Image (tube, rainbow, N blue to C red; front, side, top):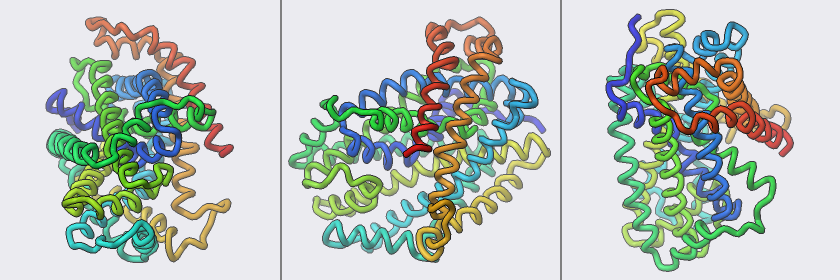
Length: 443
């Protein structure tokens, strides 16, 4: 079966940026910045994005293009048969992530719909907290929206690389940026918003400890979709003339820009209304709706916000589904449409227990964690860090000449960052990601 390719470099950058830009940027980054000290967290995060984040991303794309295969085939081709275990790990992680990620994506659709229908018009933060709890603990409603979210993801992927993923990314990513800038402008014009800007930009180094550094490094690693095979898959569709470091630089820059803009959206709004920036995960689904409820045209801005959140979630979900679909297409010569539908349905059913775990099945636990938390633990604390370490070691030590060949397009392009890339992949990235792994297991 002939392998599909991106129609343009811009299409690849938008698709790869879409893979990286997700709920981690717009949902997680602002509440981490809020709870981890603001400006100091931001500076440390930017440093990790420019070093470990960029280097591992370029490595994953290079592995994909060199092999022209899915992550399982790519690790086997580049490193040898024994390395394929890390490809299986990445593909399994992608399936598991998407099963519960789609549930959260469904929440964003639910909030968008509820905003349009006026169902979120309540009076204070406590009411919003109760509303959110009722949604996620319902046995039917979140599964319904989970099905819609997975249906949208399947629809895009079954259209193929250039005809589906690329077209959707070239449309959705610019829309996302426009909506985000629109929302940031509104947030910055709120009375008292500058207190949030100062908190976000002015570093207070007294709050920095090992936990803050680990959170910044973890956010840089996870927000770029590293370790889950998505960028290896996307890299396998990349033409041989494309300059990988340049494309990786664009993707890291766009991903970072979205996260920073999300910080400028959320934190000024939170400070403007005297709310707690350390509210954690509830900042998006509990605190922000209360903010929107108190501003002019609040329902409009709230609808725009949750539409934006849905788009960000969808672009990441597409890349996660593309990983196992690529494997079935490469390994078993299955049509992409068939593979997308079959894998998508399997992932939907895997997500049902994750959703029910927050309600009727909350009593079912594994090592003290519900099903949703167990899935998240396996992926975030184990699979992705191990995959990131393996990728760094493979490209830095075992396949370095092949990777240099890819990064320089056979020696025809200069890569001035190459000495830094080499030692980041050989030493700093494995040690840094190992720290994420150990810190995650101990906390």
